[in-house]
Length: 252
Image 1 (cartoon, rainbow, N blue to C red):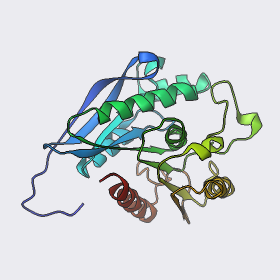
Image 2 (cartoon, helix red, strand yellow):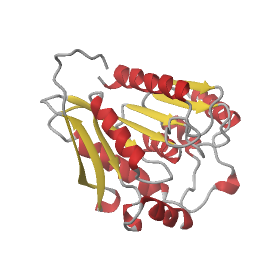
Image 3 (cartoon, rainbow, N blue to C red):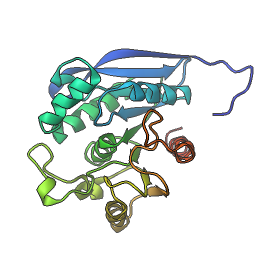
């Protein structure tokens, strides 16, 4: 965003309750700019490590850039405790059912779109498993206006990787994608590998989808995460610029 020294700036951020799958009430972290708006909105899909501090910060970052941002706790039903303990419990149980995740994220979309200060446009953003879930949800839940998939693993899945909770590979829903897609990936990543990204891209081309993919050299999985060794400052700075340019184009 462009700064001027006399600009007004403010936001509110808090934990809220929203309606998810099966009418369940689940927690979400929501941040929004102060002011009348109307503002575009974005659903922030947390990664496999859980509903953690990085996603709180990323949610506020979106609000700082002029978006109503909501990050639902997709692990809510597993109980509460430290982020690491809850995430370990979910992993040990084989992850979350895709149907439940899609319904939770569609609920988050409906929650923010109903707000009087929303402009009616809602995007979805996710990293790691959250990138997979963002893409899957954009294909299966009508109503999103843009989707950002950042190094989402297991979009392409082998038959052996399918399970009762994840019965269909997200790539197989590509024909149903109805909004523009941004994908950011690292050449050194294995989940997804460059070959898997190429398969995904071929499927998008097959169905004539509106997308842009960017593959970063000298970057692997999680290169936005400044708190771990995977962080790559140059690639992350450029990646965030691409995210906000894409959202500006499609939501504002």
